[in-house]
Length: 93
Image (cartoon, rainbow, N blue to C red; front, side, top):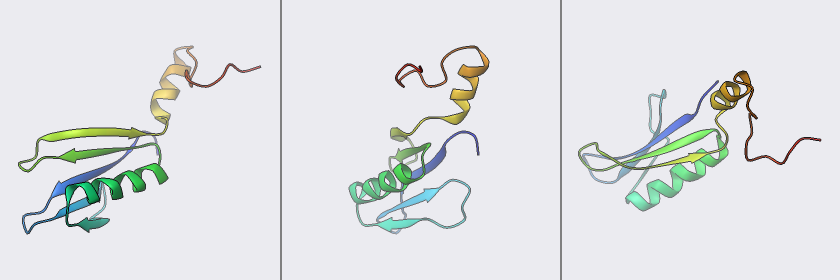
């Protein structure tokens, strides 16, 4: 898959917070606090890079985003344009 897997931390109407991976029917986990749900989402995203965590406010506004790993699609675009696909990597020899 090109691009990033997206994990959303969202408030539940019944209280607590859910962590959902976009494209899946069921939440990955539910936690009592936003902080616990965010930590769980960060752990899932780090193991599933390239990925992104989107943390929502009650009401749906985006509070924060965090990226994990290299974005394969962006690297392919840079390579197609003749740029280094991994600009933060050490020079190749």
